[in-house]
Image: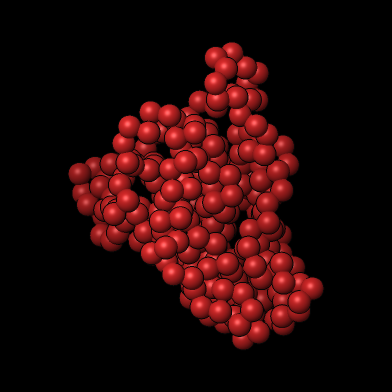
Length: 250
C-alpha cells in the first residue's frame, strides 16, 4: 500500500492539533497558528509540513508482504513539523526549519537502526539521540501538546537541537536502548509489530516506548492518560497543566 494523500493528511493533522492546543491554551482561538512541537514557535499552516517520524527511506527495505499490507504512513507515523527557517543568533540555518533539521541530523541514524543486526552493529550516541527524538515525536503524536509544553517536553525539545550528545537533564534511563531480534517476515498475527510504530506504556516519570525490536524511555512530567482540569482554578497538581512555551531558537 502506498502512502495516503499527504495534503489531506496535513489538513487532518492541523485541525486535530489546533483542537488540542486550544483546549489547553484557549487564547489560541484568536489566531490561526500552531506551535511547532520541536522549536515551539508560533507558525501558520503554510509553514508546516507533514513529517514521517520514521523516515520513508528506512521503510523501503521492509518485506514486500509488509509493504503490500500496511501503508507507508501507518508504518512511519505522521506529525507536523515546521518548515520555517531556523535562526540562531541572527544566522539563518540552511534548510526548511525543524523538518529539515530532523532529516539531516536524525533520519540517517533511524534508517541504520531499523535495519540493524544488533549482534553486529555498534551504536553511537547519534543513534541513541535519534531514537530518543523519534520517541518524543511519537509521544507528541499520541498525547499532543500536554507532552510538548511540559517541563520534560522542554528538555526533549532542547535535546532535538543537540544531535551529538545527551543533555545533562535527560535521565540516565532514557539514554539506553534494549534490543531484540529483528523480524524479517510478515505474519498476520504479528501485524502490530509493523504498524503504528510506537507502542507506549506510561511508567512513572517516563514513557516506555517499544519501536519494533527496540525498547527505550522518554521522560514525561505527568501521566498524559490522566484527565486535566481545564476549568477549575484550584486543583491537585497532577490534574493541573501550566504550559511552558519556551522557544529553543528564534
